[in-house]
Image 1 (cartoon, rainbow, N blue to C red):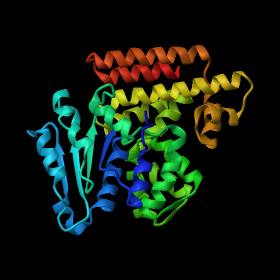
Image 2 (cartoon, rainbow, N blue to C red; image 1 turned 135 degrees about the horizontal axis):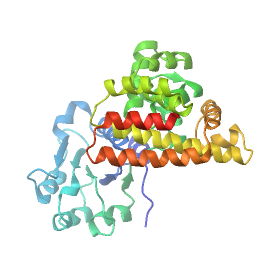
Image 3 (cartoon, rainbow, N blue to C red; image 1 turned 60 degrees about the horizontal axis):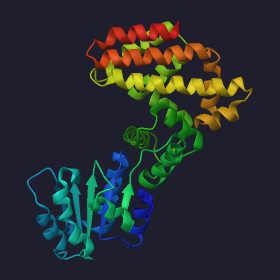
Image 4 (cartoon, one colour; image 1 turned 180 degrees about the vertical axis):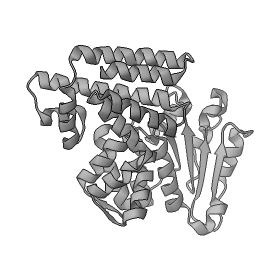
Length: 335
């Protein structure tokens, strides 16, 4: 079994005009996937003939595999290659998916056919074909220590910006691992400050951003500041979507409490900032802050905090009003 490709693998190959006749794109990294598709459009199909040689199809619309195969088998018009993107491949049933197999055995060399699937079953012959051929591409979400390099590379290659490591780390600390929001913040920084951006300018910019409210909130709870936590919570709930914000906030609090727990564990073994940084994957300045915050908690209190978070999550999901539950949660965490 071939190891699944990473997005960078196919983009590098496409830049050298080495493209497979078909790929399977799958995984939770939606933003990375959309950016890769945009790059492939540019590399494979010149803008002058894009309307003629690029098609986007949807598996949940009235379309049969034979129609997709017919389009993929057609020669490019006034260009060297056709690009066909089939979204929502998972909408086809197993019988329909098997009807693609003869084409996958003998694909058109002048077409790049990309299947995008939200659900995959590599035990079936259709999906296994991609893995066996080495053309299954996993778009995973970036882990904590991968995000800062991604910010630096994306800023440089996509936006022509120069950010040093501390500026990238601060942006990551405020926004988190949400690539779409990180990219949006980078675009704002580029418009506001130009090609070279310092950590001070990042701080100034994101302080006025909605995502900074969450950063403030995590800090206030971690330091067990009751009054400040409730004030920021009120502002957060006013700014964010009332349907999605409460559960998203509990998820972020869960992550923060677990980070505090990890730091507490390191400190109990007489470790320092370097060990906390290695354990949590946080940049140095945040590891030092986490150590200060962890000193405000006992392990028993952190355990109780996780249990309280679970209780609050269950209550909100069951339909209870989120605002009083969150206010009670924050009071209990900060006491």
